[in-house]
Length: 454
Ligand code: ASP
Ligand code: MG
Image (cartoon, rainbow, N blue to C red; front, top):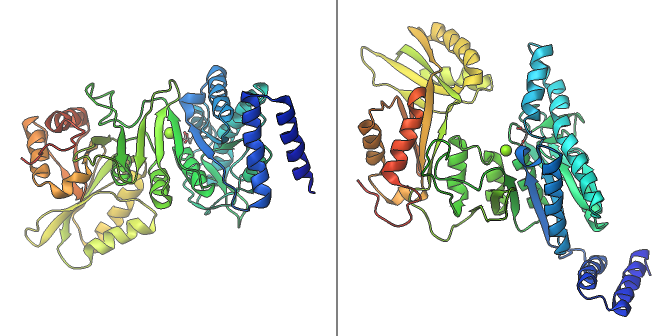
């Protein structure tokens, strides 16, 4: 008889002879699962994966409140894996610190610095849990076996081994994992996953552990039809599809990192975005919501800038030259518009993250010289407003209504791009709020079944 079986049998007998009612049932529940694991390799366990964002763990009191919440889950007999963000604004503070000592911090050292934020939270939370009688252990991304590629600052998770996580769960411990970080198995260097990356850690871990769902705890009640700080009438969505959430996140809705939504969609892990400040349900991001909305919401983004290359010769291969150079430099181009050609020349405008605009300008000027374009302009005072809804594909007239609402509000559209479930417009930065409100008024999302055609 293995040691484990011995423990299990003894425990089982103790429970029975003591005749413990609630505590006993809970213990036997756990013991039963341990026992099961020894005879069956595919253990049937229910694992809850939770992620707590920066505000939810901002100070010692909040960390203790989170520990209480985790204890409740454990008391129900579930295994818990908790992914944490850095406390409050720690990551921003670290970035500012780095800027004070260096004009161009080395990406490797930046990741060494930033990963420390989540490490603080994980240890404190494990301490608070142990104080509450919940055995807990914390692991860095690297210790948890979160493997990534090598790109510091924006690494992608390639695999999760999760060995120590699984071992600790089998030992009956609550496992706390530092979000936003991993390790490149080749170079052995630690990496970070990009801002908001703890969401990606959580959903990827939920997939690796075959959890039924992933809970993302945050400081808002869920996903809203627009940013409630801008649109007072914005409503919380009960459900939203992965596809719509991807468009909302890409459109600037900060509540979930896009990559976490991609993991959810790929591995069929429903994501429950909810508040850590109360118990009310939040928003379920899932495959097929019960009711498919026609218009789900409006996102906005002020983080991009527009670059225009004027007087580009209208010949084959020119766009390839411009965007080829930008891609080679690793720049993410979002929207692209090419004007109608006149006099054999045309203008090409595109948007890039504002943080990369000077690099984009330099490259564009070089290319402009090479191809004989006239000039390059940069506009940093722009914003993007995106209307998102899966029902758009089957409901004509949404685009017309979008443009009319903006024009009625006196807002000029500088660029337009669409997908089958999104219409995005670039407008002046100081008109973003007005644009979001105009669209929210015009559509009043979530629109479930009513006709929205113009
Ligand atoms: N602490 C990191 C950030 O502020 C990661 C996260 O919170 O998800 O971006
Ligand atoms: Mg976040």
